[in-house]
Amino acid sequence: MKAKIDYSIYLVTDEVALKGRELLPVVEEALQGGVTLLQYRNKNGEGGKLYAEALALKKLCDKYNVPLIIDDRLDIAIAVGAAGVHIGQDDIPCKIARQVLGDDFIIGVSAHNPAEAQQAIDDGADYLGCGAVYATTTKEKVTALGLDGLAAIRKAVQIPMVGIGGVDLTNAKDVLATGVEGIAIVRAILGAQDVTATTQEFVKIKKNM
Amino acid sequence: MKAKIDYSIYLVTDEVALKGRELLPVVEEALQGGVTLLQYRNKNGEGGKLYAEALALKKLCDKYNVPLIIDDRLDIAIAVGAAGVHIGQDDIPCKIARQVLGDDFIIGVSAHNPAEAQQAIDDGADYLGCGAVYATTTKEKVTALGLDGLAAIRKAVQIPMVGIGGVDLTNAKDVLATGVEGIAIVRAILGAQDVTATTQEFVKIKKNM
Image (cartoon, rainbow over all chains, first blue to last red):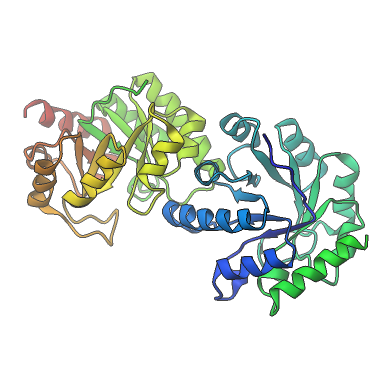
């Protein structure tokens, strides 16, 4: 059965955003602060490293009862028993991922406009990651949608959506005001001086909406 | 059911070895020349590109009734219906790959010494890729086993083995003389001026053993 997902505060890992800190302790601080969903994203690791890190994150997520999503690698998701995968427009097509994974895995798809969003839904996506909401240094080549672009996708589709890209404590409220279920955060949490306190601030903003 | 594999002439793809030529036509020329097994290896592509290329290679392999093995990515192997995967020492562990794939997929493991070979067998490997037999520019950091190193692994284990690394028309006979079931070839075929004729030469060498 598919895991029940709370998309509110969706932390996405990124090695650069850690600025040299260790992944696992930082993620644990974020989980303590109230992250509701974790995505393990690592575009550079060998399969063995990805598997080992994903497995360690799975154990950590289980401790906090938070589902784990794996970026791109369906095989790693299956191997560690993750709740699902997240697929970009350049990854294995969503339709094929659904065939490989069956109905019990969550599949999230990155969508940058209403057409991509609708295609993802047609192909079996459970949720959408939409962005970049703001310009971001995590993905340099990406053009920002802005709040209007995000709202346009929100208006067009019904499935859960998270806004991603440059989301921080100063703009999280605006992003959530578009009607998305959650915010996907990279640097604002992973790079925070006090990871737990910063995460708690995001949780507060969501609760006050 | 597991595909029946002829390990004799095992072509392994490599983008650099193609020297700018297109992958699919070169592979087809090699299949026409008598390649008995194909491995799709691409360490740099996004999942979508890997899937598309693997699918195209699967169709090509089916045409020549040659099994397809996918390097590292179990998910791509499942998605395109490949015969199996090949796993390096830095990839998803063989034992985990076997759990993910079940018993119907071929799993090959790179082994550089008898201990790694035995471990791979214990973990469920179907065949071993052993090397580098000779120093090679395809994998620059690898130390060469030499024929003696290859023979030592051959002596230690019973499952099918292929020698890989710097195998060409001048040394293929020596490699096969160690008792391995096949030779894995990269540059000597992909970079050959006449791919089909060169492959036919390898087939001849194997037949005359």
